[in-house]
Every structure is written in structure tokens, then in C-alpha cells.
Length: 349
Image (cartoon, rainbow, N blue to C red):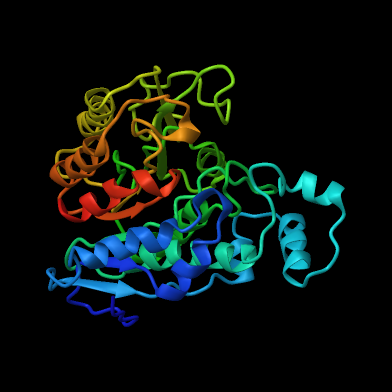
């Protein structure tokens, strides 16, 4: 695929990708070779070539300051020491979560910088104009488990949380809306089978309350990450009299099907619309489209029994309900054999 790093103002759809970035992400131990497979299939299908309004954006590595928007100085110091090939005591690696499911590996630092930088590129593209709604896709992002001070769940840096901070900053500058908004400016929808714990924690700690995090996931004893077990589905009053709703968790039972997941997404969208003005839409929706809820995913232990339709139809619902909302779709969990829903998403937007 040829790439064009200049943001064409006429473009309404962007894929954040470069061959060099894919080569870096291919080294991720939990997703060996996945990035090249996903983007190779997109190229083979001619999806970009057949969309005159689509461009490819090369991800730029994130800076230390951008990482520091969410991650602690201690965690970044450990990553920096590893980048300089300094000896890092095992106790420090343990405290930083850099073991077990998140081992250190050659290429870790470039992966972190490009994963975060790619999501920032997607956010900036989506929000850089108000003339027409824009869509950006970054399949190497969506690392929703990373905490401020530790890696976790195959996630070394929380590109989603950092991207949401970037979106808040961009909207705070560009939006001058009178009166009280009932609809949040930013809605984050997590479709990964695992609870989006790292992003939810980040949203709950944000000083700007105009962000809503919604996680539709599986939760049961012993199932990672062990959070999001209690359903919070009655909190559609926005922004609330005293404390605005920041997070909605919808845990689904084992064996959930396409119909169940799509119904949950529809319930969220309907609930938000019912408690807002008819003309209100979010300025930005960020979707984490982890595909590990598909039937047969080995890391999800058969939690859900979904097909490609669950993800594709959920994204289509968002576009139907909020047609003038900017949209960013990120990847997330799944080994590469079940990554094909991401190509299918292209065909529906």
C-alpha cells in the first residue's frame, strides 16, 4: 500500500499504517505477525484503492510528554532504562507488570511509541475539521488494559487513554457550545470480550467529565481482568445533577452471540439518545473493536460465541444513529486468525 502522510482536507476516511510500523508490531509476543497479515489483506482486497476519499496516514512515534499524559514517571523511567539496554532489577519489572503476559522483548519501545502515536494520529485526523464527519482506523491500537504504572493483559501502553486526553484537549479549544449538553462530547465503546479496565480507570480520573466509557464484555470468576463484574446499565442520565456518569459496564454471560452483543450496543445508543436532545450527537466516538469475542479465540477461553457480524453491525449501528459524529476504530485483542472482522469493517463504512 502506498502511503500519504499529508492530511488531505478532502479525505473523510484514514487508515493509520506503515510497513515499518507493521514490522514493529509483528514482534508483539501475543500477536506475532498479525499486523502484516491484517494490512496485507486490506491491500489485497483493494479497499483503499477503491475509496477516493480514503488516505493512509503513517503513524508518528509518540513523545515522552505524550506518554506522560497518562503513564507515571516511574513506569516511563523503567521503559526508558530498558530502551537504553540498562539492567533493570527483576523487582522493578515485576512492579511495572513487565513479566508473564507482558514480557520484555526486542522492539518493545518502538511498539509502545508507534501504537500510541498511531492512535494519536487517528484522533487528530478525526477531529481536525468540522466540515464533514471523519473516520480513522488504527488496527495496531486499542491496548486498553495498561494502567498508569504497569503493563497488563498484553498491553504495554494505554494508547486509548492517551488518545482520549488528546481529544479532550482538541475539543476544549475548538468547541464553544452554549448551555448544558446532555450528550457527552466523547463516547468510548469497548467491544473486546475483556473488560476495558485501564481505560475506565483513566476516564474516572479525568478532570473533564464530558467523556463516557462503555464496556461490553464477559466477566466471571477467574476471567481476566477480574473487574467489570457488576452491571451498570441504568446510568443514562447525563451529565447528572451532581456527579456525571463516567462509566457503564455491561457484562454478558458466557456464550453470548452476535444478537446479544448487538442488542447491548443498541441499548447503549438508545439510552443515550433518550436522555439527550434530538439534535445532539457526540463529537467523537472511539470504538475498541477487539475481536477476541469471536468463536474459537484461544485466549478468551470460549467466553463468547460471536462472528464477524457482532463487530461490523455494531459499527454500522453507530454510523446510523450518529451520522455526523467523528469515529475512530481501534484494534485490540485477538490472535491473527480471527482478525478478519477488521477488514469487513472497511466494507461497511
